[in-house]
Each structure stands twice: as structure tokens, then as C-alpha cells.
Image 1: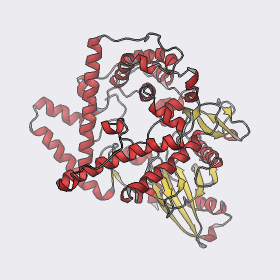
Image 2 (image 1 turned 120 degrees about the vertical axis):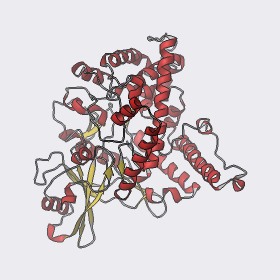
Image 3 (image 1 turned 90 degrees about the horizontal axis):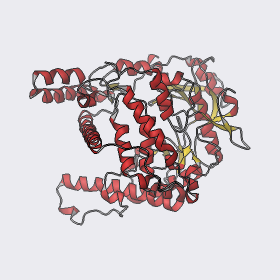
Length: 520
């Protein structure tokens, strides 16, 4: 019974007690079964089985099966699924809105945006997604079938991108928002756009602040920094770049002020680029695990619409991570991928690397091709030279400050150097850049930024060796091996270290338990 309330689908290499506490969710099991049964006009007498079905990053899902074979899903958000009440309300409204536009999603049967109910938790009752999860077969599909699926997904995205929205923000039913919350009605519907439920807007104390949430988060960060002015340490893997000292918030506040000076010039105001301003809704996490297909590889359902938000197209456009291959020159130039002519003569390792490189290029190339064919406004936004840089600017200015003053500064330097390209869609093209950096200052910042990128690459290699995710998660059956590999890696690093280096490594090792408040 305890497994119904606690996380049981894996372990964490570090800070496991905190991760488990965040996912502990008590509720009334019998009442949840009653609610699930009632949603399909049944009673608990009709329930044949009730079991934990899945555990994700923010939700626990249960499957109730009736004696006649009908199945229904109950989705309960963890305590860490901020913002409470609004996250459930927005997911339900988003599902029901996109369904009106032909997007295949599960039917919502019932929901509660408050834990003040007989179940004792927020919940969404919905039909079980039709079809088979694509993740189970994605890597075994022939290339032609993957290309067809990307085309079908692009057609679905075109339907999403065509939804006329009056403003940026997340989707809600008007009845689910308190009258004190700013919102804009979607004409002719029960829906409205309201505050963004993206996690960055609600991180830590930000959730308690009276802020306008969306779409630009720099003012949110400035408001938070004005209240919480304590110096913070960057992530443990970056602390060598600050000589293991805490970073000053005043520097980040100055960088945010510089960003806000750029913002008026970043908006695409030229007449031919007005389409880039359209508030655009998109699934927040497109990947094969959230796509269900039928036996003919038609997309039968898209799941996990939590934390979706509409933003202007020039900020929304992008290739989903599972298809993107931007680090590759052939992909950047959109060259049609081919396998090496000498593939059969390569060693086994070289052959596998060549096939994997081809697969990544193939996905990237065909996503662009599908967007060009089925979702041309998206394709045009993707092809603009300024799109990616504008998005990096907005992302780094909106991201919750974690004691790292380098990332935002580096992208501001890039913006100053590429100013003409950056404002090419603006009616103000030709105006001088309102910010500047000395050559020495820029060079030093970009050096540290590149070094941090290098650290990221090395950490990814280490995580792959241990078999863990970015937050240290590992499947139960791999936990002991991950612990042993973590110790081996640490021992390798300590073997040639001086006494002072050993002290710093042990104190700041990123894969051991550590304080997460940024102040130690």
C-alpha cells in the first residue's frame, strides 16, 4: 500500500531523501477508485483492479480496470508540481481546447484543482491513451516510417499553431480562474489565456510573489533578486570558475537591466514579420514517450500536456530535442543525409557511429522538411537567423538565478556582436546596439562560458558511465552499479590531486549529497 503513496520507479544517486519527499503523495485510495468509476458511470463494485501505472517527473498515474474491461486513468500531481491548482486547471483546459482543433488527446472525464476533496489530492481522471507508446518501437522503425511519423506530427503542430489566441500565457477555463487573476478571454469559447504555468515562473519563492507571469521573465527575476539579495554559489560543477566563492546578485541584476534595454528592439515589428508575434501554443515535451501510435503508425494520442504555455511564434519556434542535431555542420546546412559509401569496410564501432550520426541527421533534416510542407510559418521562423539567438536571450534572462552570472552575459555579448542580424525583422533595423562590452571583458566571459560548456560535456560522459539522468535518477536495478561507478570516477580524479585539490573535490563533488539552496 505504501508504494501507492511513495515513489518506487527508481532511485537517485544523490539527495535521494529530498527527491522522495517531493514525490510522497498520500490520498484516499477508495475515494479515488470511486471518482474513477463514477467518471464512466460505474461504482466501486465494478472495479476489477487498481494499480500504479506510471511515475513521471511531476505526476503519479493509476489505472483502474473495470470488470467489463473498461480502463480509466487517474493522474495525481506530486507536491512539487507547481503551481498548485493552476497546473491541473491549465492541463485540463489545454487538453480540451486542442481537441477542438483535431489534436488527438485523451478525453478528460473529471478533475479537481484542489486537494480539499474526498480523495485528498488534486487529480485528473481521463481515458487511457489509445494505441502503443512510440518510445517502445521508435529506434527499431525503418527510416522511412520515422520520416512519415515526423510528417504526421508536423501536421498536428500546424493545427496547434493555428489556434487563434488573444495573448500569451497558459490556457484555462474561465470558471477555474479567480477573478483577481489577469486573463484574456478566447472569443466564442469557455477558455481564456492566463498566467504561465511554466516551472520557471514558480521556482522557489517566486511562486509566492505577486508577479505578471508571461511571456518575458526578466522582470520576474529582477523582482525576486530585489527581495533575495544574498550571494549564491553556482552549481557545484561550475564553482572552480568563481574560485569556490559565492556570486553577487548585483552583477546579474545589471545584466538583466542590459537585457531589458535590448527587448524593445528584439520584437519583430516589420510588416512582413508580423506573423512572428502570434501567440502560439505548443506541446512542452515532444518525445517518443509522449506519442502513441496505432498499428499503422498513425498518431493516436499525445499525452503529458502539463506546463504548456503560449508565447509569440518567434519564441516558440524550434526543433524538438528528440529530433534536433544542431551541433552537426551538415544538419545546420540542411544537407540531405547519406550513409558513408565505405560503410561495409568500417570497423564495428565506426559503423555503429556512422549509422547513429546518419539517424540524427535524418531526424533533423526531415523535421525541417515536414515543417516546410505542413507548417510553413513555423518553417519560416526556424530559418530566420535571429530566432535561436533571441530565444537564448529570453531563456537566460528568464531562468531562475542559480548563482551563475556567466550564461546571460555570454549571450548578451553575442547579441551585441550580431546586432544587425538580431534586429533584421524589426522596423528599427539600423539602430545602434544599446549595450557594449570591452574586448577584454567579452573575451574573458566567453572563455569561461566555453569552459562551462566543456564541463557540461564531461559531466554528460560521466553520467552516461554511471547510467544516471541529469538529476541523478537511476533505475532500481542499476542503483548499486551507479554507486560503485561514482566511487571509481571519484577515486580516479583524486589519485593525482594535491591535498588542497582533494579537499575541494570532496567538498563540491556533484554526485554526492549536498545542500541545494545555493548558499553553501
